[in-house]
Image (cartoon, rainbow, N blue to C red; front, top):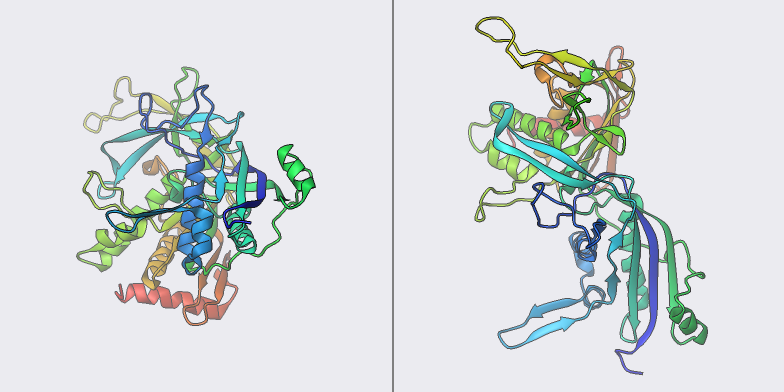
Length: 456
């Protein structure tokens, strides 16, 4: 039997559930700045290239020591050796386009805030289409086994790339660091066909996957986690609004943005507020270079083709706002010189008000990849500002909206010496903040000290 002879197949079927809105841009901007990719019938889908690209980068970034011949056989390569020769290997891993016929598409508005003025920047308004959370995509993978391939190695690679999908720790599409594209793989069916067995050949020809298993029988590669993580739980002190503007005449001019019928705090709004506050804090400690350091932490897109582009290492999540109720308010604009109302300046908005000031309403999740100690210290300073009701989130801050009250937080990081994952839980008590572990609290104080002493 030749080395390239096909000896079997792995078929993986599953359902990919969207946990947050998804942006898969088509490159068109006829109606909005970013349009969702659709087929000829108007049905949105996730192209296989987007899925394979995300999974390959995940494997390359986290397991570079396993990039050998098996990696090349699994993912395929095409590279020039010199001017006359090129090495190409066909990928054994095939992913089909993912379709969801019940997917809902909505348009969201965005605006860039000028950090120096804390108002919208000129000509920085944009809008984009999203696929709403709750959509379920059909996933189909196919892995071809040849005589030359190491089947056990392929199984371990599959287990490794399936692991973050099953746990919802990997995102697909655009703006993933702003909370978009979070997904979870469910209803998994892994079917192995051995073409040395006539029965398996027949089942393959008939596309019979009834003898599949709910998981692949292999352990994933262990990932080294250099992530600083904060998950804070907050109550809305009074009211909050992340504005969405209605086009219907019988609706308020501004309501809080929703996703799949639920009020949400978008990752774009949260990350923008965190970034601006982090820059403000850093500028109080540094005369020069603060913006450059913030760009290397939060990323920068670059306005022009030749501008520097840096991928963000800070990731936030879009979360549902709970224990709130919308109430309509009518407001007017006042002429500051006459003290009277401005004509045609009447508008109404529907902010969200807390049902109980003590009830948890918002969970804020922040991750920093490949962090430095001073960056962790900076994020602790930002957490302190939100916790102490000094950093409002969302719109209409000038009338007191967006103030959050800290209830509890869980902070996780990796000890530099032992590589052990450390965890500290803090809670708001009657006499101040309570810590679950004093030794862990001391480590966090070291991060803060590094930042405050200017060791950046």
